Amino acid sequence: MENIMSSKLFTTRQGTILLGVIAAIIAAIALIVYLNQYRNSHAGNASVSVLVAQKLIQKGTPGDVIRTTSGYYSPTSYAKSQVENGAIVDPATLAGQVALTDISPGQQLTASDFGAATNSVTNQLAINQRAVVIPLGSPQQVGGQIAAGSHVDVWTLLTAQTNGVSRPVARELFQNMYVLGVNGGNVTLRATPTQAGTLIYASQNSQPWLVLRPTVASVTKPPVISSGNLGG
Picture 1 (tube, one colour):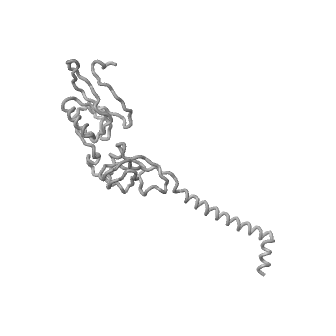
Picture 2: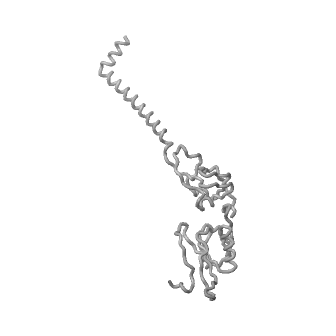
Picture 3: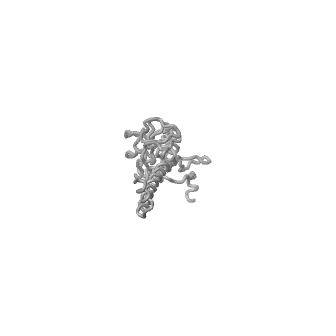
């Protein structure tokens, strides 16, 4: 009896249609399964740019130093499957943070590597940097426009000897120095030890001036300005 019914199923028009529908359903299910497997197998190959340490970042290094000083990290593309959990993609994430552990060169920067920093100037200094305070008047601070986070060039007015004749000159000391803070007439700059000593000497023996610059600016090499080249 079952053989007779099976034969009728294959020979009747309704049976043929039913078998076609079943075959189409099976094919659709197989296609869906294949597409899901394909997506899953290729999802891990999507490229993601994360921050990778270029040199040793020691425990205690402030995140603000890492994000504002070149050479600490480099954006690097990885396949999504190779990106570590909590990998940092935006340098702004490091603001107000401090490294909780040593981070080796080539290591991805992750959220677990950093924690909240205390509100201290020292948390904005790398191991080879210092905070130096120089007293300035309002004109020397660009009329009070300089604030924490500003980038400045430092000029100084001094007296130079030329052929035994003293004359005032203006000379640029440093470019692109980072302002850590401003308190009244005192400006705190992030500097190397040598720069700190030079600024202290200049503030006591000449007149330093700060020139406000954009965060991204071209590197220039201005001449020493004197009465001889003042007009041209």
